[in-house]
Length: 149
Image (tube, rainbow, N blue to C red; front, side, top):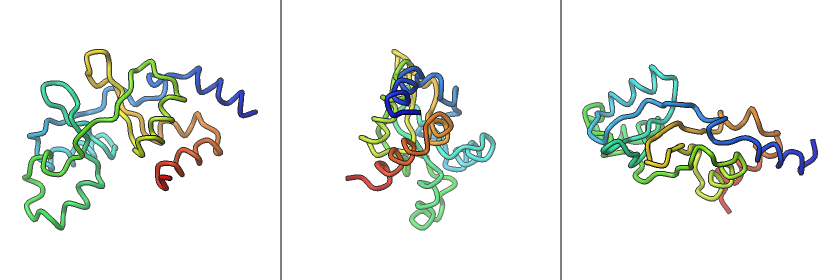
């Protein structure tokens, strides 16, 4: 497939087409243990954190792993103590090209998909976009996130 054909194909797909729909979420007051149980039960590595129904951050399995040394009582702490505040999000109608551009420019591995009321509709990670991208394009996205310029 030529690069131009690949770009057209990426513009034909939307965030809604590739997202993992309806991810499980936590509140900022949920315990780290509650989030870890979501990681286990949902076979995922990230949980959107909500306040008043809107995303305010994200907690990853890596955040938990790195916090173990700092917090001996980690399982009982609220996720707000270790989550990454702030949200990188797109509308469900964003094209796959736009999603990849945001992953690259923001240097993130996951992006939330929200509706016009900022309600979480889904989450997109590399595992969601990899099956629909060529190895070359996926490699470039990963390189841009892992080794920012």
